[in-house]
Image (tube, rainbow, N blue to C red; front, side, top):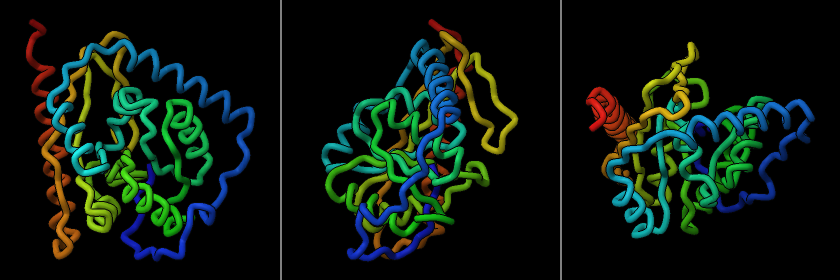
Length: 237
């Protein structure tokens, strides 16, 4: 999910103006189907221990929407958990994004295509409108290419302009495989033990600096991850 820059979209933009993605090839469809099956196997068999989800969902309801954030390398369990809820996801217009978008749609997410380099401002207009209408945005604030665990200002822009809360969450698992990618992507093993932790909601004031708000989100995500990793170090009762 790409991190859009803190641009200043105007009401003149519309969803229809967002650049159209290319038609899906058979190769993209096949790769997406393979990845989707893997997600179902790995996430669908995980044994979850979740802290704070009920309060987080209540916050989304009370504020008529919000922004769920997690690190780019920790998205697999979240992708499966929140399937078929109509949440929104930003996906780049790259060829890798074609595969990602296909999977998000198969799991019941609504997609907006755009990124920093292509279609970013128009995608931001659409996402703001969906947030204002009560939508929930799933977002990776260190995506799409990092630096890992470094929050970029895109998520702060959306929170400030919409007035919606940012809800940090981290899910991790053991046993697992950590890929040698820039984001240290985590693949839980089948039937893994998974720990899932939500942080407190974060609201961005109109006069708060991007730097301060990004730091708060970063610290919250790191605290969630540390707590989740600590849960997994404890023996199963």
